[in-house]
Length: 198
Length: 198
Image 1 (cartoon, one colour):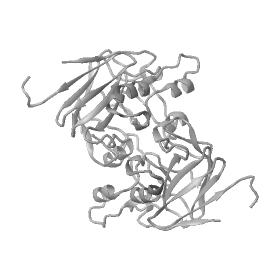
Image 2 (cartoon, one colour; image 1 turned 30 degrees about the vertical axis):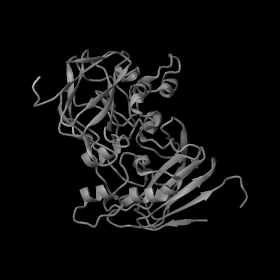
Image 3 (cartoon, one colour; image 1 turned 90 degrees about the vertical axis):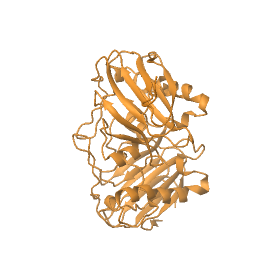
Image 4 (cartoon, chains in turn brown, red; image 1 turned 180 degrees about the horizontal axis):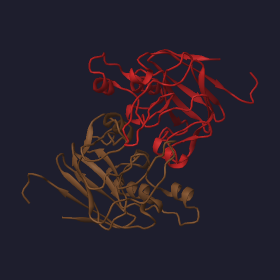
């Protein structure tokens, strides 16, 4: 069963170890911010720094693993039809809207959407780390300057993760103008349970 | 007054807004991991993701600011005689020693040293984020692969930060082989209070 994340909103998803989470860019050119917490102890959280350490790369795609602050693998990337994602930047928020779009209405952004979706689990705002920004396109030049470009994902592109432990995952359809080429679209996802008959 | 951080150890430092923290590579080729917390609310912590967002660069040097998870400036870089630091990688730890140096003795690393130094403030291990790794030299190639090279800092090189709020800072003399060109040396630091007579 495929679920829809409406434009500029977010959800929380419970995954059991071995479940596969498929995130689909239904219309193309849309970013989805992902954060993850160990279900058994929410102090264990996805970490860009530990991931860069162990994967020895900032470019994460099929075969890469996303690590926690406690040096354990949370998610493996099994399939990726895009190959361009970002793990440098934090979720857009009221503060980033004020900073980057002073003439536009302030929106709570992915940060506010993640906080709202994760609040029922007792996960507070300060516990939201740098997200793994699915389909986000952030080129970094030789001098270290970064840029937020429109995603290269096309309609139907997807990334498939396997949960390597029981997880609470926060997932959004991103709300920021630059990240999504100026548009806001939905994100689709489904959870598959390999080996379990339907 | 200049203080010494002995090889493979760490300290906690209290800074008042306006204080200047000078971190000095006394012998050259030595990394120092820095983390920072708002003194008035320790849930506010230095964030590589927010810093990359607002500075629009992963290369941070004189004129750059280091931001918190709550989108406030914690530290400004006033002076930097090196220009090469890292904000991608997490502090070395027992886990990273086991992973990267399986034939070497396990050390608690900067992570353990920061945890010990910050414990008296009630800051636990899970609250230690990706550090700003002073003098650390982590080139990233066009394909996103990263490498830990020896620091380019020479004896006497320094970086000067201004505290933009009251802070608790954790600071180390780094314990990992690759980060320090295979050697372990001390780090010196001093806190200056501009405008206050000695």
